[in-house]
Length: 383
Ligand SMILES: [Zn+2]
Ligand SMILES: [Zn+2]
Ligand SMILES: [Zn+2]
Image 1: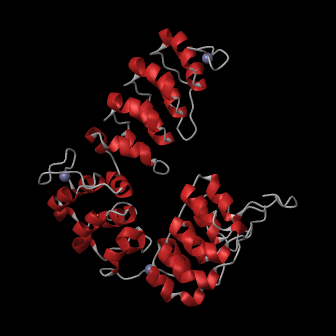
Image 2 (image 1 turned 60 degrees about the horizontal axis):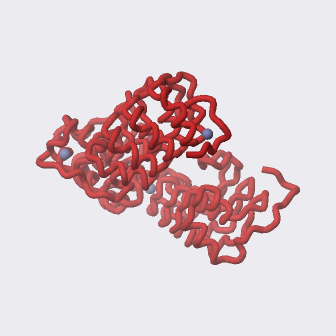
Image 3 (image 1 turned 180 degrees about the horizontal axis):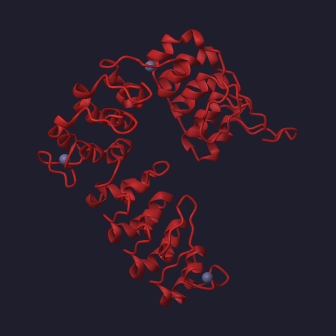
């Protein structure tokens, strides 16, 4: 095997370089941990291995070489190489490591499956990990399940391991176990959030149905009900049971509340400063349509588009660009005919935004509009 890195100076260096030949050359060092290894997005922890480094960077060849020696090792916080691969979205590495490290949990009780949705779902990794039942006993499993569109954990009469109460049953995403502990319904956490609010927010329709009768109508510390928190797939179920609690059009747009968008329709056209859209610095002059588009609430986008399409915020960003940035194809489809070809102050168009985060389906869709082709950058503006 040939060195591909110009010569690593130790095993950690070889793992970082992704050089299999050098990993083989320093294999005697396997099993040693180091305290100064940092990955972006991960807290600084001691006792990391070269395998974790290779997995973090997605160097499957090195992972294969090192797995035999170092699989199963956990850092100071009990994070594993499999967790690193899952979080960074490297399915090749997950495939190698899952049989060896499945079911391991860190100090927070998170398995690699949980990591696969931080900060956004790595679908390929999550699907590989879902196949191992040991991975499924972790927090926010209900949410992962809803995102993957998989069927409930099969459970015989409320017997999931670890489900010893309603909160556990709900985090494990098991409707049968939740049913069994329904007498505990109505409890709230420090922010006033009920189980129903959480499962609504995560988009777990089956759990919403189980909890609805017992917990409908509750409000959190900010006065929001489950319907306000609900993801699109649960809005319909809750709409019949709970009233709209939106205070204004921006709140309706953010929470995806179509009834609120209708109720406050007369506010359309107003812009607001200080509206927080993640990834996009506060630029001022944002519309409710931009907020709805950014959050992927196609129903609200549809209601607001004819009143607010064509506007730009303080840096020239449009609703179409924010939908493209987040990969919300349905919103892109509604907005593209209305805002195609518009550019921000740096000359960037919606298609550019979609390409930045590899939103392939949005890119493909926008490609059908010649107006979205990249124009020469406007050199007089800097972002
Ligand atoms: Zn090398
Ligand atoms: Zn169960
Ligand atoms: Zn509302």
